[in-house]
Amino acid sequence: MKKILVLTSGGDSSGMNAYIKALAKLCKKNNFSLFGSMYGFAGLIKNDFVELDYNKMPQVQNMGGSILKSSRCQEFQTQQGFQKAVENIKSGDFECVVVVGGNGSLRGAYDLMNAGINIVGIPATIDNDLAYTDLSLGFDTACQNAVDDIVKIKQSMSAFDRGFIAEVMGRHCSDIALKTAIISNADMCIAESVSFEKILEKVNEKTKNGVKSPLIIVQENLLNVDNLAQYLQTETQREYRSVKLGYIQRGGEPSNVDKMFAIELAVLTMENLQNQSFGIALGKKDGQMISQNFDKVLNEKDERKSLLKKLYQSYSF
Image: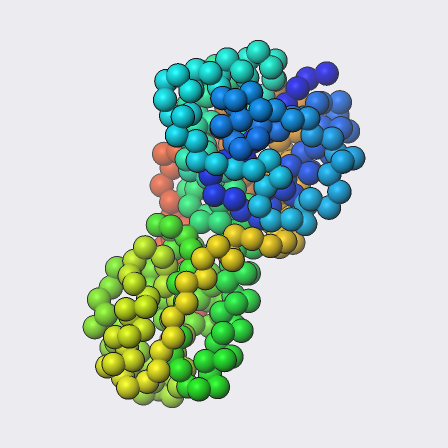
């Protein structure tokens, strides 16, 4: 029976557990033995592997986070730590290592591939910043979580005609901010560096057109939303409140979109395992599931930002 090792690494995202559960089901169906590396790449170094039995994983597909835990392993980036990880994989006689995570995780997978390890990469990051795929596990859930909270807070702010500024996650990618702004019908989305003065001009334009409780969505790492709220309140003589949604976007039950994507990724993983096709990362492009060569995965240009920005500009006024 061939042994497969799966790990989750970097920031957690809803859908990781759904993928692990789906992969465990397919491994059981196709006579593969599935193991998990605890705490991501750290488990590779510590030889911390656990067998994953599909029958002992009830309802984990409905949980956020990762049952295999995660970490950002600095030791894996050292020569000694990396070599230890490679040795443990080989001594464990694993046919393939499946790495579930974002940019940093897939770079680690790429390094393992170059060291002679069979690799399959799975895109799992709420930031949705992997250029080779249109979708990553957790992105849809993060947007849904953000929209749900923003709509609730907006209702409260509207009762007082207060302005409302919400900072969403995404690191250096604007996908969550733009999609959330579109769905929540925000009055403004800040997805690139802009001065407070320019924001004030836009806010004044909105209020002159009858908006009593402006909603502004801000991508993280661009500005201080608390300072912006104070600035706008001083300049407009209207109350403003700010909130950083933070980790609430990463947790909770995965959306149906993420659950289905997890199953699609697991099915494609099994197809590649059976065909012994390795050194690839899986994803979805133009509605179709894809297996992309790793050499292209980490160097492809991302055009999604401009597409979402065009959609936002077309829809907003």
